[in-house]
Length: 635
Image (cartoon, rainbow, N blue to C red; front, side, top):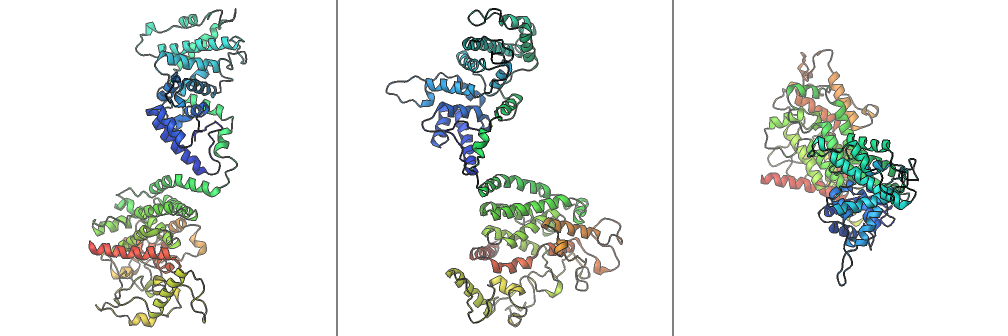
C-alpha cells in the first residue's frame, strides 16, 4: 500500500474499502502518468487523491512511492528533471507544469530520502534506484544539484556525520557532494559500459585525480578527500554497479529499495494512515479481506482437489483414490476450506461472493455441462475421483444450510447435479429399502388437499407479513411447503398422507415406478451385489455426533478410512472389489460410491429442509427446477 505522507493526502480511517479504492485509483493514475505526466496528475486531482489546489508535497509523495503501483522509473526521472513552464499572460497552465512547482517537487522528493547516517555513495545508490536519470545533461545537472543539497548537509561526510570530510559551510558541502556524485556516476558508466575498451576504462588514479582539490571555493585548505576514502568508492563501484533501468521498475524489491523501506519504517506515519485507531469496523475489514482472498482460496481448493486432471479414472490412480489411500488429507483440507469460505461469505451477507463461490464449487464436481460425453465415461470420471465427490459433498451440504441465498443459478446447479447423478445411477439416500425415494412419478396434483391448503395459506401469510398461526383453534403447526409437505415425513406425523398417496394413480399406470430409484441396480451390477437381504452391501458405520468429527472434511476422511479398512483380513490386496464367496457382500465401484454419498450427503434432507426457505429462496428453487425441465424439453 502506498504511503502518501502529506497530511493533505490522508487515507480514510473509516473503512479499509476506501484504502482499496484509493490504491485502484493510484494504479490507473500511474498508467496515465507513464503516458503523459499531466494526465496522471489530473486524474488524481479529479478523483480526490490530491487536494485542490495541488501542492508539491502531494506530487512528490506520489512519485516517491509510485513504483509499487506501476510508475515507470523513466517517467519519474523525466518529470523530476523538467524545468517547467513560466507564467504566460492570458494562458492557463496547470500548476503542476509551472517552473516553481517543478523545483518545489524536486526538493520535496530529495528531502523524502533518509540520508542522515548514510555515506554519500550509499545515499546515491538509494536515490538512483528510485527512478532513472534522464538523458539530457541539463536535467541530470538539475537533479544531482537537488540531491547534493539534501544529502551533502546530513550525510556521514558532512560535519554532522562521523567522517567530517566536507566543509562546515553548507553551500560548500553541497557543492562538494555534487562534484563527487557526478564523478561517481561517470565512473559507474565508464567501468560498466561494454562499448568502452578495457584499456580505456577509468583507472583508480584517474578517479582520485578527478576528485582532488575541488578548489578554494569548495574545499577548505588541507581538507582534500582522503585517498583511502576515494579508493573505497572506486572499489565499491567496480564490484557493484549502480543499476537503475529495470531494477525494481515493476515494484519488485531490490537491495537499495529494501534499505530505503527499512529506514522509512522507523516512522509509523504510513501505518497509522492506513490502519489508524479510528478503524473500528471489523466487518468492513473482513469483507475487504474476503473480496481480496476468495479467488486465490478457490484456486487453492482447486489445487487440493486436483479437478484439472482428466486421468483420475485410470485404474491405478483411481483405485488408490477410492480406498482412501491417496490424497485423503488434501481432500479433507479442500472440503473444510471450501465450506469455511462459503460459510464466511454467507455470514458476512456477501451473497454476490457466496453465489460465485458456490457455483464454482458445483462445477468442480464435474457433474455439470459435459452431457455429450458417453454416459459410462461420465460415470467413471465421477466414480474414480474422490475430488469430484468432495465438491458435490460441499455443494449439497451448503445448499441444505443456505438454500435461501444460493440464488436461481445456484439451484440450477443443484438440480443439474442431482439429475446427472440420477442418470449415472449414483443417487441414493439413507434408510435402505423401507424409505420412500426422493420423487415418485404421478400425473395428478402431487399435493393432497390438506397439503395444498397448507401451501396456499403459507404463501398468503408470508405475503401479508403475518407470523401468527392460521389455525386459531388448534395448536400451532410448522409452516410447510411443497417439498416439505409431500416429500418429507418430518413435515407431518408419519402416515398423515399415506391414504392420499396410495390413491394417486397415474394415467400411464406407472404408479409404483420411482423416477429416482436408488434401490434399482445399475446395468453393470448384479442384483445380488446391490440389494442382497435389504441392507447395504458394505456395513457402513453410523456417524454419531462423536464419530462425525468436527467438520464435513473429517466425516469424508473417516468414511474413506473406514471403507479401506473393511474386509482387510479377508482381502490382503488393495482394491475396491470384495473378493469373497458370499455375493451379498460384493460391491462394484458404482455401488460403493453410491453408498458413500448416501452417508455423506442427505439428498432427501435437502428437499425436506425447503420448508424453512423464505419466499425468495423457495421461488429460486422452484423456478430453477421449472427452467431446467423446460430447457431439457427443448433440447
